[in-house]
Image 1 (tube, rainbow, N blue to C red):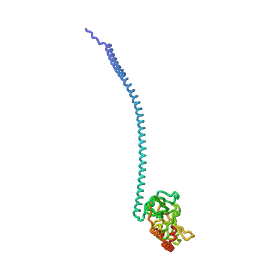
Image 2 (spheres, rainbow, N blue to C red; image 1 turned 180 degrees about the vertical axis):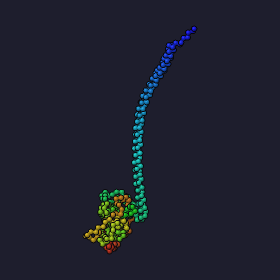
Image 3 (cartoon, rainbow, N blue to C red; image 1 turned 180 degrees about the horizontal axis):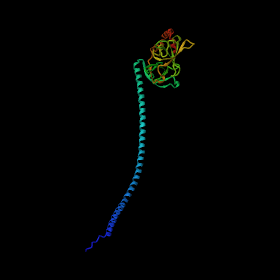
Image 4 (cartoon, helix red, strand yellow; image 1 turned 135 degrees about the vertical axis):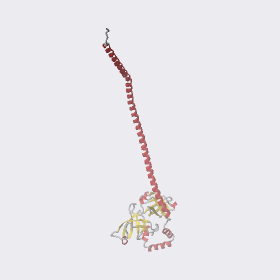
Length: 316
């Protein structure tokens, strides 16, 4: 009878354990190999981080320096633009001044073309150093036909106003005594009522003119704002040149005449250009009269008969 043998269970267990150990060993070997392979990668990562750090610092400083340089360039450009703006503003002011000057010159030119009695146009170039507040020096003289005692007017804001008369004449310049001078007298009258009087200044271009020798009886007819013009009774000034407007009327308790203060027709402080008028016809007649003694006696008699002869004498 044959005897059957069972497989050796102990040997099987040994084989199983061996296989398991082999698998574990292989697994551990694979893990160790991966770990060893990752060491260079870790070093590379560290080196890359350091390089990135220093690169960031370099980029920061580069950007900072560039920004500072760019800011300096912007500041320079800003300063240049501000300078140009100032230049443009100055040019604009100059342009406005030139326009205003052209407008004034056109106004003066239009006046000169429309008035046939103008001898010459002149510009105020200085004031007399010996009497700075009551004399003008103009840039025209005998070479332009200017003569002694010629009337001088100005055209301002559409108004032709009396300024003064020529007192000294040179070849290329003349001296004008203005209306506001205390030595200046002109025969005047009101343009509406035709009441006459005598006007002179108080020595300053800022003070009003004074009209005297107006009867108290006539003072009631005078109102503020009334226009006073030249009467033409003297031998220098033509009639109806504007002198000023009534500013105040004073009737003193004592005396027979009123005192009337006038606002000048033209602003003396703003005048730049003047016009010298040709001799008034009566001036020419006066010169002809002086050349004949008989005629002189005749004019004297006529003057005595004229009720305005006192005004004429005061103007001389």
